[in-house]
Image (cartoon, rainbow, N blue to C red; front, side, top):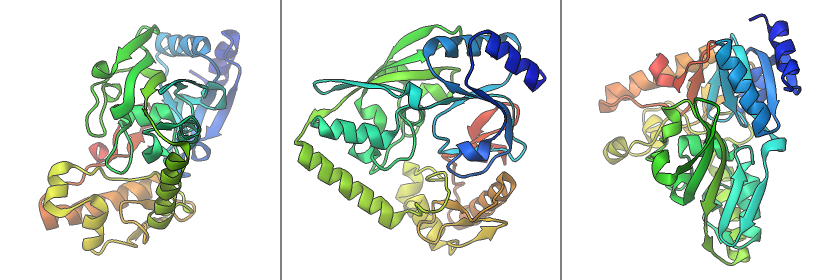
Length: 318
């Protein structure tokens, strides 16, 4: 559908916070991506339901994002609607050790909020530059921890635009995986349960996590976070992806305007003006070299979004 006609239909159903031809590089931590036909800021569940229903009725590609970390957009952009969780969908309520938080809440803010109330368990996520919804989708985390470890319930929009409540078991959490990667569900909010702790001790652990990330990771250059997954069988054979890539002498390897970070080899940084084409070529070179060395194909954690709305780990498009 022609973007301006689609925008008119969205306005007619009450979806008003939208932009035409929005550069997705502005909504990606990698700072890569062409224009989306329409970008919508999600303000509430009801307008999201209307948006999803319209997109499905008219067969319009639709994706939902948070801060745009762990995502690579195409240089050609997106021929549909990008719906973004932001500040207006980022509330949190705390009762004892229980936290009910919206999908759009920024993880560092959530970790600090939990610390202030003496809730431990989110320290590992305090330096992750993403939203809760994205972390649950990936069952992400750091320091060999995952958000699924403290998730009790998730509320999501199902394929029929109904709000459903899912248990942790329903979410099928495993290493960097969840049911949300395999079903057309949109995470709305989650119930997390931490453990009691001294706020001062929790804050110290958060500061230690942040200091370690500042030392280990290229935080000042645009990146998507870790590019390759740390699969147990590969880890046992040769170590984590960063070490494997560094041992192969690939730190600093460059294609166009993207480069394997000289700080941490499991990060690919945008030197300015990098493209998805550059990223694809660089990742392909890395995987070829590592396969020849250890006999395993490194698998990508980062998701690639095609212009028509297909989403999958980037290596599946190589």
